[in-house]
Every structure is written in structure tokens, then in C-alpha cells.
Image (tube, rainbow, N blue to C red; front, side):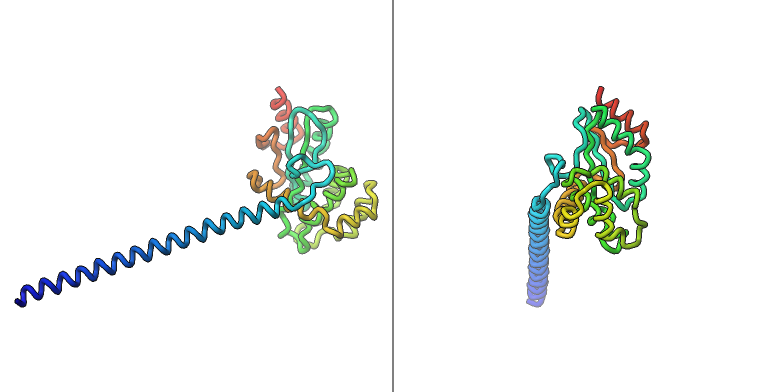
Length: 238
């Protein structure tokens, strides 16, 4: 009898262990499923939010159909230029290669789309990248995007400071021939701040991770010198 009792007791212990293991496995699966549901819900929620945020903007005059940049020219080859107005390398690019892009546009060889992204807000104390990009939208609305962008790069503030204040941004606009009052109203009302967010978000979605980035007919260009850009446009146009 004691041997049978021992066997019964051992069987009972095994059954309890199996039951505990089954309960543990169910709990793990339930937790994993709950986490998966939360992750999926979060991703869906973020997609909806980002889509709504990206769609709630007004593009300035001269923007491309996607609203992600300002178009110059109508040549057969498309050159996308992604720049941040506080980026020192972007300033250097504009100084060395900006005239070449202008020539390619003037000669009807290229269609250049300028994307004023706001990646570097952390390098100023007043979100200067966003403010300058939004200001460039006001300049585009006034028909002077390129002139204004060149002036911003010429007076680029150092990283780590406040950047140019709004009064200075308005003054620069007036200097390049934009109506002062209209520009000031556009800037101070934040008319193109949502557009700046859209431009920046879409650049990130397109895989742009640094500035300046140049793509010719969608292909990245490593050599951003005047000769490199010209060669890339010529190759794409063949």
C-alpha cells in the first residue's frame, strides 16, 4: 500500500508540475500577444498621426507636386538638394556648387528641387533650422526663394547659439526684394512651419540622413563639386 501511495503521490506531483508549466506557458503567450497588439496599435497610431501631421500643411508658391521642395527650372534631369540653413557644409556647398546648379537651370539642362530640411534644431537654442526653413517658405511665396536662401547662407549663424532672430530674417527678406510687411506677417504667423515639418519628415522617409545630400534622378551623388554635379547631370541626360 505504501508503494502504491508513493506512486500516486509522485504522479500527483508530476501532474501539478505539468499544470503549472501549462499555466506559465499560457501566461507567456498571453503577455506576448498583448505586447504585439500594443506594438501594432502604436505603429498604426503613429502612422495615422504622422500622416495627418504631414498632410496638414500649405506648400508655398513654386513647390513641387509632393510639396517637399521648391522647384527651379524645368530641365529633363531632376536634381534634389537637401540642405539645412545652419549646416556649415551646406553653406560651403552653396558657395562652391550653387552657381553650377544655377547654370544648369539657366541652360535648361536640369530641374533643381531644393528641400530646406530642419534636421539641426538641436544646434541652436531657438530651433533656428525650423524657423529659417519656414522663413524660406515665406520667401518662396514672395517669389524669391533662391535669393533668400543664398542670403541666409551668407549670414549663417554659428552652431550652438540662438541663430538669427525674426527681425533679422525679415530684414534679409527686404534686402532681397521681398515685401517686408507681407513677409513679416507670414513669418510671425508661422504660415509655413507645418510645411517645414512635412519637408523634413518626407526627407527622412526618403532615406536622407545628412545634409547636404544631392541626388540626380534619384541617385545619390558622392562628388558634390561643380564637376561632379555636372558629370552626374550629363550622365543622367544621355
